[in-house]
Amino acid sequence: MEIKTISASKMNSYDLCPYAFMLRYKLGLIQPDSNALRIGSLWHKGLYLFHSGQSEESVLEEIKSEIFVDKTNEELNLWGEIRPMLEFYFNNKYEKDNIALEEKFSVTLDDLPPIVGILDRRMEDEVLDYKTTSKDYIEADIIKNNQTMLYALIHFIRTGEIPLVSYYIVNKAKIKRKGYKPQIIQVKPTEEQLEAFKAKIYSFYDNVLNDRFEPKFGSQCYWCSFRKNCEYVKKKS
Image 1 (cartoon, rainbow, N blue to C red):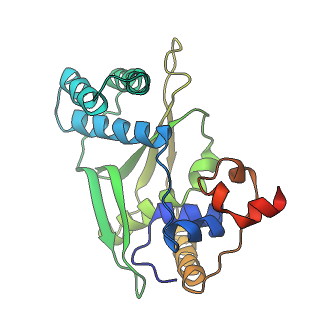
Image 2: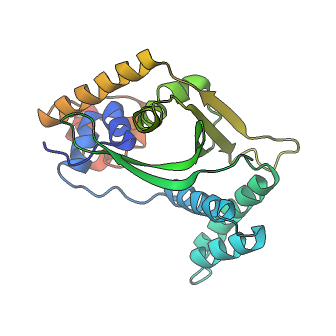
């Protein structure tokens, strides 16, 4: 299978299950939108607007206008989830001078396809990503996420410096609790770790190029978007 670009999301998808990766990226099966994806998209947009200089009130109004079309119960519930998250951030903002917001990147590494992605925030010696969750993260979640190493590698290729990779994590189930604070987890990889990750990128590309798409069974099978299309899950059932 040929792929035109490499990204952290593609690598994460392959790590989770090569067969599901194949269904999505080779066969082109459409992954249904989920409420979590919609919330994440609105959350990121709201923070981008806020750090671009818009007032808290105008950010809320713009996000609200994007949600509401017919004022359905679904839209009301969505607004009921995203508004507290944005208001929470306004009171617990990550304050540091920005160099770039929602910065798209595309870099080449030897003979590989372009490596692409978007940095939520880039600062002088740090890159920051926002996460929403219903379960607290642990540092191991961050270290094993391809996004961490990819962001650090991209910054290193462009600047020659290894950045601090920071995650601002909001637990949607806890934001209304008195005294709740966001998780801030930070990792600074070593050059050795970045070299190991480069090797992982080459391995990922080689596996995809040679159609290595064996299924990987696990808890992810229960919530996989392609469960109904998976012959392996059907055999296991």
